[in-house]
Picture: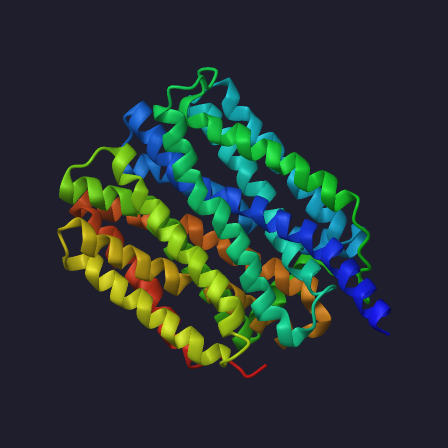
Length: 392
């Protein structure tokens, strides 16, 4: 009996570790905020022009998420994740050839396509390993692993831009090469890992997937994902700009604001994996949203570095568990249509296109306070969503 328990636990670890490495690779998409700031500096772009990069990345979630849900029905979730990792590797190798506007557009487009496929397929793949009661906490732990890659990105980019060690002329773009190597490891480990997947009852079409948005709760979840990622990408991109605008610091120093956001988001994901086992998702969600609201208020009024860091940290911690709670709510609400609902929820990451575009125009018009106002709209919606969360 004990030997069987040890064997089962070892088998589970051998399956979950490659999956968690894939969550780390999923975090590579968050380098877009850091990279777009460096491209803006190198090419002398305006805020609205630079914000096109993160918007382009998340535009592909609108196009590829639902078709990916159907692809999973045909080839399985694991094979779909492997395809996403291959596309991600290609996107990370392209900047090795330069950082012109067109090269970076192509790189970010492929990064968005790969990440759209990955997020659609990887989250439901976890359901083959974890019970529904532990799904929210497990997805949160996956977001913790993802956040490690996110907060390391500005640190690695700054190291590449300022190091005395040779980076083969890549500078901050050495970040892409380092993450490409890690992505190769993720492909190798997952490909060698056997995972038993549940078979879908029948194939589905785009029409059927989109029709699920006609269910009020699924629509609320979809909009919640849009707001979450809009705030995530928005803070990732705008935090350094707020520091530069109000304190006059150079990008290499102001870029640490992005690391502050992801450090607290990482801490929030790690703690959330345990907190969600102790208290209800609804209560934790409410606390998280109130933290984000407090952070936005600080960004509106404060002019010194420490309070701004506190505000950014509150937003990072508060936003860390929003995705996993909303996503698990949607999956459990429609247990027989997980692939289709996953595609819809990941399509909601299109909010990463809508919010940065609106924030860029608002910032060009009235300064970075306009960008903060756009993100605050998303926080207000999440307050409303809190009232609709169901008991799992």
